[in-house]
Length: 118
Image 1 (cartoon, rainbow, N blue to C red):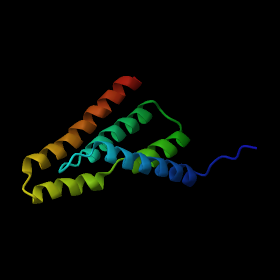
Image 2 (image 1 turned 45 degrees about the vertical axis):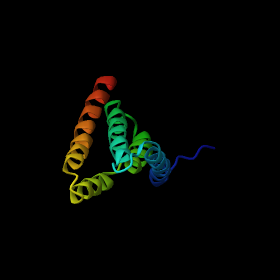
Image 3 (image 1 turned 90 degrees about the vertical axis):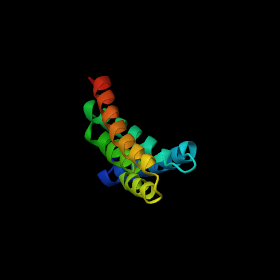
């Protein structure tokens, strides 16, 4: 007998998957002195969530993948702290690049997802 998963279970399961993926990406792409992992997960996560949205994923898929996986994979709080930390260390160009990279990268990711789903 198949029992449907409660919404909280879908979000929790997706959250666990996204958190592990987030850790792995950070380990794989972080550069000494620059938070590349944050930039990569935010752009990839934005692309994935936009693709799910534009593809009209079902409610359960959005809970598991959108809210759960993408929600714990991406990290706006780390992005904010990274930008402030770079600026406090007088690395203004890196702070500006990181802020614009996250925002522009997310915008491009949304556009690409829209094109692929359309």
